[in-house]
Length: 367
Image 1: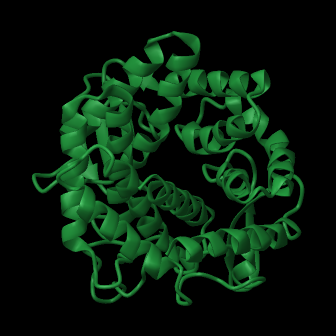
Image 2 (image 1 turned 120 degrees about the vertical axis):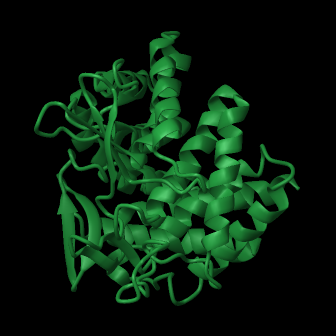
């Protein structure tokens, strides 16, 4: 498995060099659909994944060309450090500039991340105890999505590098509020919780990208697993470890034979055949970190992650050179209810796939 994954990474570097030749300077690749590229500008929530993936692959393979390609893209991303209209600054800035710090500990990168954390923190409401995900009307609505757990890592980083504990406190408050109101008894999660911005009371629990309000949207479950694993890493608070273990237990109880979940664990028969490689990649990456903290579950978590990776590196999911528009993974789902990005490659699927591969290789090197 180790040799196979090393080969996958080397080929991934070549694939991303191919992809880079197709991407115009000022935009970022999102997907490749019906034979055409879909690009986005720097303000899109997925903009940080492409440079982040370039750096993750380059760090393992020694391909410095990939870092140089990432730096070119990050010049277009810098201005988003002051973007207070989005909660996705962790995805956008930490997955890019955070990884860049592993290459070069530049003060400019640190300043960008600190400013990004400040912009993210500006969306926090002490009344609700959470960071607003989406701006909405009426103003009394305060929408929070489970995805937002993934942006908290940036805030912990900011506290470590500035000494300002307000960032950390906001992250903890958000995680506590989410743990209290987003999860059902079986530790599946709602996608969206709408709070009253004036009182903090829950107005409704619903979905945006899932099959229906009470369903378990697969990538949403993955975001929760990953997010609470990070919360335990950063705080060592046992309630976050227990939450991550409970979420893992739910996810593992739902996994199909090939370990690549349908886009929603409760998907209706009409579209349950659409698999989501992006959810699988996030789950694998999360389990490979969670196993470090959970002796009782470690063996199972590692085995499931290995099973996921075995499927993802098979011909059904891993593209050959020059195929799939230059993206690595096939068969992900972005937003099926909106008929958007169905059975296509997705930039964040590649990012978390590469992260999972690196974590697996690191784990085996330590054995």
